[in-house]
Image 1: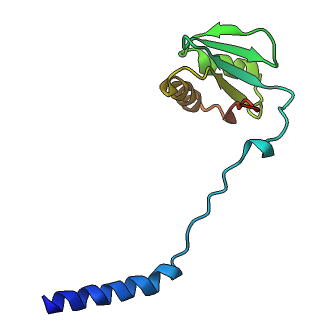
Image 2 (image 1 turned 180 degrees about the horizontal axis):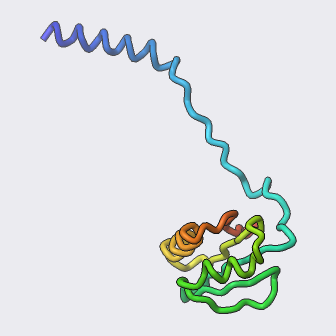
Image 3 (image 1 turned 180 degrees about the vertical axis):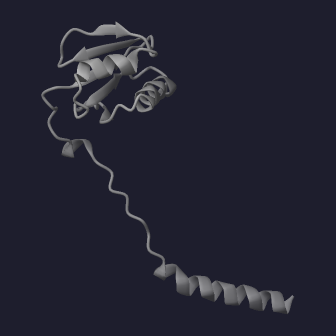
Length: 122
């Protein structure tokens, strides 16, 4: 039993000496207050409470779209400019899985600059 205690004390000392030397990683998470103004041209994917998808370009009238046609229709609205951001606006009462399906579909269709909208003041 005594050798076991000696080994444990040596390990304890080793861990106490090496613990302060371990550097922790810093994650820089953006905050809502630091977000920039909304770009002038934006493709917005609206996910309603019934999980139906609609597309809107620059605060225009929304049009219904299916998940299968989402990527092709977004590319049409971007008009060949991949720098036009795509923003997903979802109802707060839908399942997280519905938003993830939209994001996965956009990623599979190689749509870049996809983001989520945030309501301020709530």
